[in-house]
Structure formats: C-alpha cells, structure tokens
Image (tube, rainbow, N blue to C red; front, side):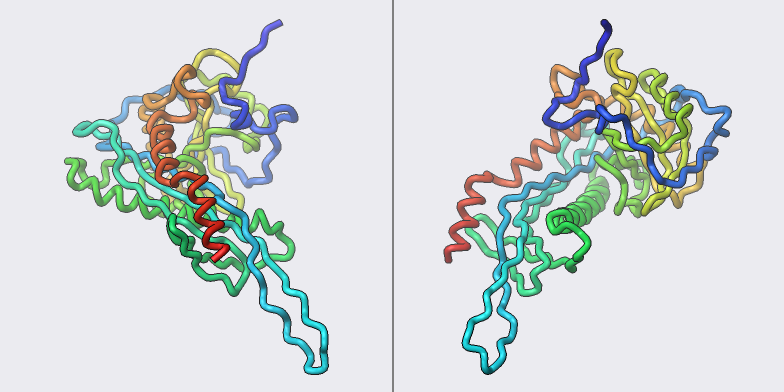
Amino acid sequence: MRFHVDGWDPTYGSSVENAENGIGRSEAEVTLDVELAPADWKPISPSQVSDPGAVLFVDGVRRVEARIWIDQPPAAEPATSAVSTARDAVMALCASYAAGTVCCCPSRGAHLLTIDYRRGLFTTATNAVDVPTTAGTYKANITSDDQEENLAVLLSTALQRQLADLEVLVATNARTALAGHGVSEGSDLLVVDGPLRGRTQLPRALGFIKSHRTSYLPPDLHAMIATLAPSERSPVFSMGTSWDRHAWYLRLPCPPGAPWAGVVRVECAADIPPAKAIELANLSQAVLPRYASIEYKDTRAPQNLVPVAGLERELRRHLGNPALLSRAMRVAAAA
C-alpha cells in the first residue's frame, strides 16, 4: 500500500480543505484564455526575470480576547405600566489584531520593517462605547445588524475588515520606509499572505493562498495542477466572484507526496493588463520558491513562507499576554 502523509500540522486542518469530500466546485466566472487557450494549457517552467529591488511580505493576526454582553436600554414603558421592562443584552467581541511587513532586500537581508497593533470592540449594539482597560483601550466598532446573518459570523467579518485595513496601512508605510534602503521606487514586490481581496489597490501586489477549498478549473485542467513540478506554474486565468482577480497555481519545492503537496494559488489585481499579470506570474516563480519553508522547521511547510512564519511570531508577541488581557477586561467590567 502506498500512501502520503500531509505535512501540515493537523491543528491547521489540511492544505486541501474538505479533503475527505474532495474540493468543492466554485460558482466563480472563470476566463481560461488569459495566457493560453484551454486546449494548450500545460505546466509553465520558470523563465529568466530580473529580481525585484525588495520583497515585502505582509501578514496580519487576530485573537478574540473575550466575548461580552452589552446591556441594551429598556424599551419605553407605557405610563400606566407597573411592571419594569426586562433589559436585553447583545453579544460582542473584544479582540486584538496586528499587522506588519518583513522586508527582504540586498542591503539588509530579512528584517521587520513596519508593525502596528490595535484592540477593538466589535458589536451591533448602537450604545457601545470604547472600553478602557489597564492593558489598553478596546475601540468600539459598531456594525449594522443583519437578521439573516449569524451574529458571530457578522462580528468576525467586521474584525477581518479592520485587520485588512490595517494590513493596507502597514504595507503603504513599508513602501515609504523603503526610501532609506537604497531600493528604487517601483521596483519592490509586495506579497500579501492570504487573498488579495480588499487590497487590490496596492500596486505590484500578490495574494498568496496556502490552502484550497474550492476548484475553479474544469476537471481536466484541475487535474493538470497535480502534474506541476517544483517551481512550475499553471497558465494565468481570471475569475470573478464577489470580486475579480487574475490567478495561477504554483508548486513550491517540497518532497514528492500527495498530488497537491506544495501547491499554492497566487493572485493579482484584475484591472492590470494581462501581459502585466503574466509578468507577475513569472516573477512569482523566481521569487516565492526561495522562501518556501522546510518540514522539520515548520508544520505548514512548504506553503508557510519563512518570512511570514517569523512575522506571525512577532505579531502574536505584540498582541500581549492573553491571561493578563482577560484579567484586565474582567476588572474593567467590574468597575
């Protein structure tokens, strides 16, 4: 019996999500002939490209510190009522989140370039205000209630939007900071860990998706992805769901194993010319495999790129000690 072990730590799920049931079929509108006609699709080998002046890796982390309940004011009572109206309460999330960039450039190697962190209170309660604690202030973020959406999902989405906005801010600041690194303006490459959604306005940016839950390609082309050799990629295609982008699949260097071992999906903005998207795809082949992680060092190898793994550790350190934050929240609630 031949079998392969998924190199990912099981606590992170699988690099191919829903692997036991197969990858789900996407409803996205896909255009396959951006680079090659579907009949001509084949693995594309790396080509000679010029290195970027610097590679900036952007990532963010989030952590829910507490779920709290915010009392709602009672409804107005009739003047003749002798019974007090029961008070209601709305669930909210208190969370910490952080984003930063690691710069890899010839003059200074890999180093932390920008970092920022925030604490937020996420709720639909219109009477919510900032919550000051001894460990920092949780800034109120009030989102519109949606009776058709699960409240926990609604609040988690609001938190994710704030994190995405913070990632855009640190990426913009990072490019400003590059002026002192001897990097020519417009020569850097930005790699966002995760989909590029909400960040497509960033120039020369790639979204880097480590795991797969959906199949975007027809069955025969989807099967071709499993034949990619290390550093080979698929042709560029475009797809549209709630947002549009160019995309391609790339296999990172890794030991032989499962059909999709080491395969990532890379994205770029849809509003750039196809020729420019192909240039970025070629550049990703030359750049991203250099930063692939190794199994004995990282339980999500090779997809969890080395600079991103180091950045994640630093960002989580900036979130603070969860036990101290929880205690500070309980003290603030009692006060």
